[in-house]
Image: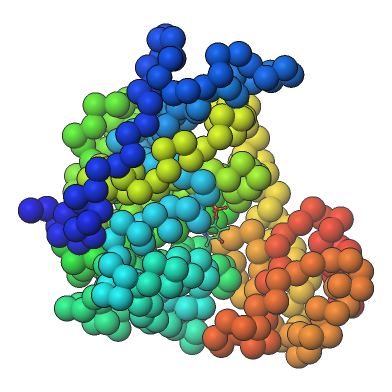
Length: 376
Ligand SMILES: *Cc1c(COP(=O)(O)O)cnc(C)c1O
């Protein structure tokens, strides 16, 4: 039995998923109890009277091209938030299994685990080492116990730092066959180019896929000969500017994708979103993306220096994301002042070790200036 089947919840392995009405292009659909006419004013391409295509092929192909992986290694989800939830549901038995997280980090991993009734094992990042992974403790806590999933966030929210790619691989290798290591790369597009490349070429892709769309993808595949126990979360919510579309992607081995697909609602992504996102992931968008990312990075550098120079700021963490975490002598007052100027920043004080910190999203230069002015 493959390790994926061993790790999966047995009842999900055995589950007969909901059988949705067969989707076949070019056929007249008299099989799904849809109305045969469009609602008046419905100007969508496919017609909103029809259920959307599950795991729509056109979007899968766009995303496979974007992330340079093969189609069979992708699952389209309603944001990476849904991917996190589905992974926990597919792997963790309530009251028995656990996930490992490395705080301070994104809160959804622990919330999804608790909703499922899974335990949460915390192995804090090393604050003194720039919030690096505590590799040996993590491996130790995940060995021989109930941990099925390890959630790593790189760049990490809320601290902004990249986790060392070799440390991630070390954890994955040490837990091979025993846990799935899920790397959340929601902010990876904002990281330095070399870091992005290093992580992208380590994305877990399998060579058995036939659905390659270009020789470029093939080349990437060939450079990744092994299929580690890594899964990657990507999202269109951050650098792509499509948070409102709720579109995230799980990248993993085809057997993991197949398993998780058993628990995703069949018509997860609405037709209007499918059409909008397919249209938006155009060559034009992909050409403008680097410019936007460069703008965010430039403002990030400027804000990092400007914030650090403010009298009430005791430190600003270096960031590979589109936000900065700053420490304040009086964070409550900084929050109040921002709020008085009708500016919202994120209170990070409840995270362990960040009792004096606020998280600031990089805005437009004008917005950033407004924020700086409230704190001068
Ligand atoms: C914003 C964010 C996401 C994105 O979630 P979506 O559901 O795709 O919008 C995922 N992970 C982290 C760490 C985030 O900060």
